[in-house]
Image (cartoon, rainbow, N blue to C red):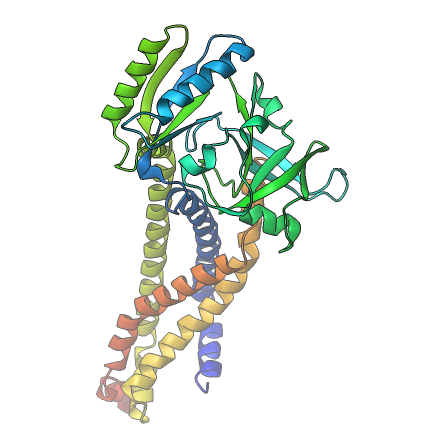
Length: 404
């Protein structure tokens, strides 16, 4: 503690360099905090467990090309065939399989009233009565859909006309705050949907959508899918065979190419993985640039203060005390930079929010990036500080003698 005041006095004696480095580090902390936030958001989507049994699942797309009343009977006929197939364990009809493009996302609320409603965007997964078991989603409370509750509709808007829903646990916790959710309601544009079940948390989107709502309505258009499950692991060869068999049974409907869930996820998240790697690279490069700046400034201050260091050594200062002095200087500069970075970080997030997405920077982002920056600054200053501690008292004896 006794070195803090002398360090402040030395920094104030020639403030231009320290002020510039403090501003640079503060701006770097703000940028790194924003990058950390987006890296974490993308990593949450791409790296976390989705909650689905991806390795055992595949899907084939279906275009029935027939009236709804005929389509429903055709789907149930296909389901009877697929669920008795020797190579499959189960099959279900869904509006769009998770991880695909153009899945349905809708705002849902905890009240029918517009004022004061808590609205969140949820992944709306339309499915038949087998959907949850085929996808491998655990039902934690309540019951599953009954066959008579499943409807086949011709509009994605009609999906949300459902009377019942199974919601993910995080949505139940958000809206009902730990209370028993069964029998309560969620709302879509004033339409009440009864909660009949609560599932484990799942995420099947390529965006930061944390909540899922399963409804017993299936949209019959080109995005309609059959989801297939094989406990031996889903293979492309099996999906190809299933597609051929379905086409042979009825040429009136079109069965598209099949794909495994793992491949669907991989293909539709290529852009996210690229963004994640690019942001991590930028994060590391910014950190390195700042470290080199700190290294250069500390080395310069060591060279500029070599005489004072020699005097302190002559007066009995140990090598550790000299080294510690420069580390304290950098810590003081970091404290000023942290104040700047903490103030600028939310402003940068607000700039990104101008695109229409409401980003909220978590409080821990500047703390984490600041901690990383502090470690980097001390590490970068360690070598010049160590070199300063090696200055011998004899190195200034000549100049001191001349002055006498």
